[in-house]
Length: 539
Image (cartoon, rainbow, N blue to C red; front, top):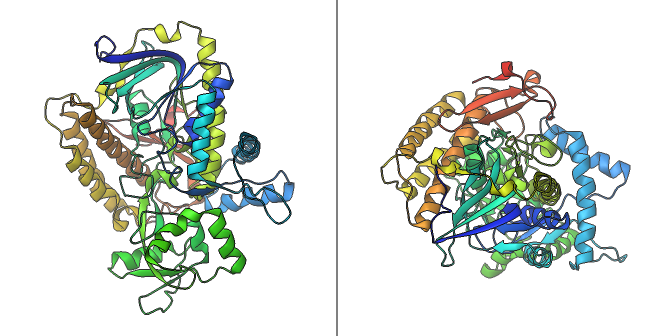
């Protein structure tokens, strides 16, 4: 497929590193690439500093001082929950890099709260202040920012290496193309437009673009995270629900319900039409003061309606957060966050987080640590790669990879496709409580939607084109999720199979996946960095 560079209405740029996605991971990648001597362009589908899951709220941070006992406890706590798929070396690297990066954040002037002893508390960040600071830092590093500029497809050279991307602009220009020596995807995960706070820009765009270039994914079966939320609010901050008891409308406690181990019981009640209520009555006075100071945005929805969540129960629900809280994503092949496609790097939720969390969500704190660490490494490695390729790297001939998805002549109803995908992935009965038969039924539907999508033609209107790409990315993500879930006939981490309720020691391995028309999976029984063997292909 030819690129759009020859069109007169296309804005063209050349750079060393193109970063796609302006959340925490993208900002760290852009800053580090620039600090490594590269020219950098940062493109985001929203406004860098306000878009994404972090910007509108607060987040915890997996920040652990370099004390052996504390570090050991932090690492060990994830290994059992994650089904023993986390890699100890990656965990140690993330803890070290997060510790160093938050020191950098402090030096940049972030106002960490101070405890009674005068020490800064660096275990949480306020999203608005954090991302405002990151935008300022990125601009000071001479990174060129393209706001409101969703990327639509990658550019590949004759040998399949990534040499840039092109997309649309929502600020007057019809289109843009950036030729680059390397590209970092920091586009976040996929929450399937479930209205979780800040997540409706996270539609799996990076997965689709990367897969069109031949990239592989890993851990996509660990994608069924549902965040606890007020029933009348989009805020999905589950951390404070560790202080909750869950109740019926008459105030009686629901036995077994909990924010971690008992979330399935909550889902069963909601699915049966029984409203579940929460009361944060397990928090003591110190907890309550800490909660208010650490993440004040969590309480805004309560304050607006006059509810004190520590003394009054309130209705809750579970919102699908997909791979945003799940751990699946693009497969990494080295410590610099390179993907399986030459010249393409991944950071944040675009990259698989099972390396530090295994098969169970680490929640916002692990997401935040992973974003800052993987962004730092991906930016540094991408800059090294691009500068090593020389000035002519971005001048190579290129083809657009997006033609692999829509190549027919029919008109696509993107909204209807989104609703159809949501119908297969949002119900607890299909995604949280999985079975082989149920997954097969959903895959039959999803594969049929894919065949229809392939027979459609891309819209000329840039906004309609973006909506089509988001719908296609959600559909592709759902198929990788369910095909991977089918390839793991056991219960491990957040992946629950009703027909295989126990963890199987023989399945302590990674599930790789990929493909578009034909979605494949492969069991990988070696450490993450060992190349797969041909005999491992499973389906």
